[in-house]
Image (cartoon, rainbow, N blue to C red; front, side, top):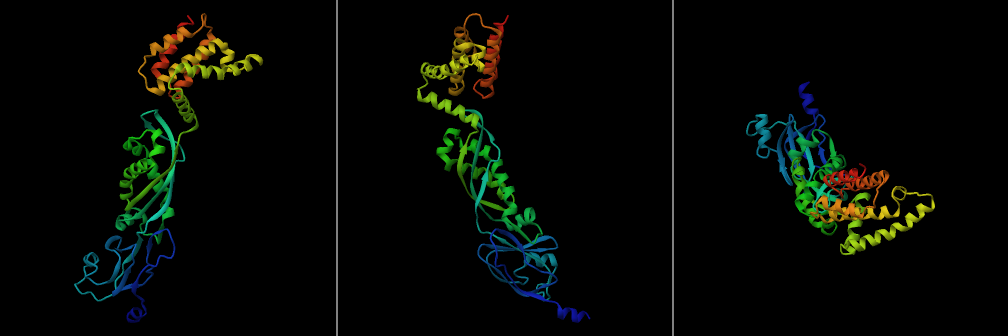
Length: 352
C-alpha cells in the first residue's frame, strides 16, 4: 500500500512563475500534496526573486537564473533538513516568487492639510500631491514583515500603508530642504528629493526600495491664502504703509456708505462709524506689517499708534469691536499672543 502511494504521488520537476497579471508583488508556487523532485529545475526570470521556506523559516534565496536543486544549490535548506551531502528523495518546501519590477505611477496626496513650520509664516498648513515609484529589494524581509504565507500579495493592498509613510515624512522633508513655502512651488525638484531622502528608510524597513518621488502641486488652505495675498499686495506697494492705508480706506468707504444707508449695517459700521473704522484700519495695518515682515517693533509702539489714531471718548462698544478685530488677527497668526494681550490691556484702560 505504501509503495502504491509513493508511485501515485506527483513530483514537481519544474518550478517557475510567468507573472500572469500586473501589480503582484509576491506569489506562492502551488504545492498541494506534491513534493519537489531531487534535481528539479528552478527558473527565476529577470525582475524576479525566489525564496524557499521550510517549516516557517526562510531558507535559500535565488536571484535571476536557472538552477538544478541539489544540496549544492540549497545549502541553508540542506542544513535545516539535516540531509546527507547527496540526498536522493523528494522534499517538501514552500516556494515564493517575488516581483522586483518597478511599481510606477503610485499616487500620494494629503487628505487633510499638514502643519509644518515655515520660516516666513511660522506654522502653516499645506496640501500637496504627487507620484512615487518603488521596487521590492529584499524578498526575505518583505516576506517576514508584509506578505507572509498568503497565496498572493499585490501592490494595491500595500498602497494605503505606503501613502501613509509618504505623508508622515512631509514635515521632515520641508525642514531638511530649508525651503520656505513661497519657494516650494518654484523648487519642486528639491522638495521631492528631500521627501525621497526622508521616506526611503521607512520603505527599506519593509524590504522595499523607494526609487523616485515627484511633487505636482502644493497649496495653502483658503484662509492662509488670503494672508499670502495681503503680503503680495504689500510687496506691490513696496511696503509703503501710507499707500496701503489709502487703498484700504478707499475700499472701505463704499461699504460704510452702504451700511449707513441700511441703518448702520456691518460690524465696524455699527460699532464705530467711519472715523473709528479708519483708526482701526491703521492699527490693523500696523500689526499686519509687524507680522508679515517679522519686524521687531515693540507692542508698546503699536499701542501708542492706536492711542494717537483713536477718536476722543471711545465708547465701550467701540473697544469691544476693536478687540474682536484684533482677536481675528491673532487667530490668523498676524498678531502674537503677547502683542494681543498688550493691546487688550491698553484698550480696557479706556473703559475705566
